[in-house]
Length: 68
Image 1 (cartoon, rainbow, N blue to C red):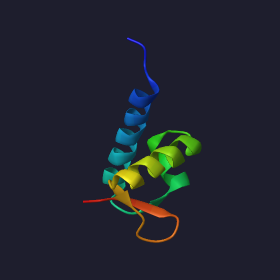
Image 2 (cartoon, rainbow, N blue to C red):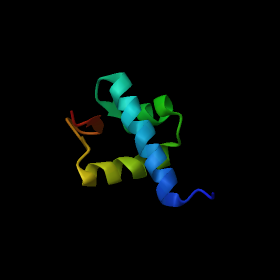
Image 3 (cartoon, rainbow, N blue to C red):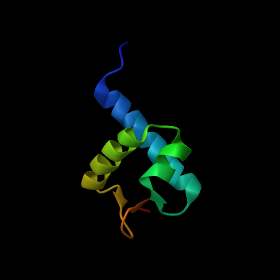
Image 4 (cartoon, rainbow, N blue to C red):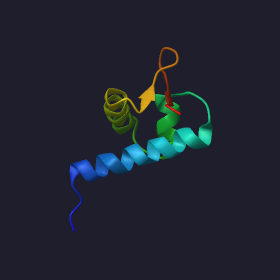
């Protein structure tokens, strides 16, 4: 079964979600990408989509956290 872009995006979002849960604190995009083991640009795209969907928020400038 070939991997589609939407499937890969969901996989990255799942990695981001788990990384936030493990960190238990707001993270910058670069920190998040490093901890999740993904490219920073991919993390930025996923964060933008997750923020639009309402699953994460920005408690202060340049930091993001998962809504609990």
